[in-house]
Length: 271
Image 1 (tube, rainbow, N blue to C red):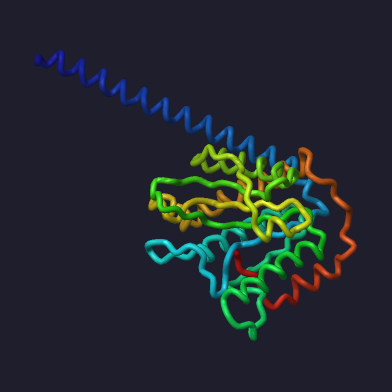
Image 2: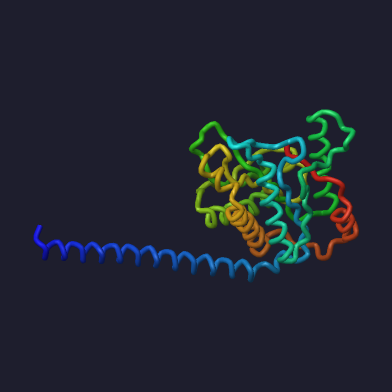
């Protein structure tokens, strides 16, 4: 190859590399601009959470670890971190947030013997927490697992025949898909004690698969946990801003909520 041809080839190659870099930069800037606009839109709608009582339920806890990852990571720890971040987002928007647990404990009595008995007690008290305080929404956070290690992605679940729960789950599912960009799943119906027994819209959010190696690493990443929490928060905001159940105004049981948040001795585990 002659020197002239070689120089021409190198110039064209550099131009091609530069062109590719410019395309990626344009894509990144466009995506960042879209994400910023989306965040601003959520901020505009956030007043819809005023006077709302929202129960945030990080699944499992105490003697129940939930799914255990290959590296020993516990579901109960991951969902607690996401739940805490979600709590902060919701409270900053003016909602009253009741956490079913904010430490690695449960709501069963110390004297209750047996894992099954403790779990039943936990479930009953979790439902009572939401129903007694007339919560507007119940969000239960979990990590999924399956024998198929290739499966990944977040998904929401609701009680069979619960249209308002389905509506809330669709908003949350849409935000999970748009923010995490790891799923095209749609809300699915189930039949669980929690979703069946609560008197308000209830959404169970499986934030990803611990059995997928790549996703398990993401679920352990604090930055990713923050993105998950933001997606759930954005879905909740849009649900109430665009057709969610009507707020009842300042809660009549304000003192009950205050007492719970200040004195609650424990939190509940997951089915």
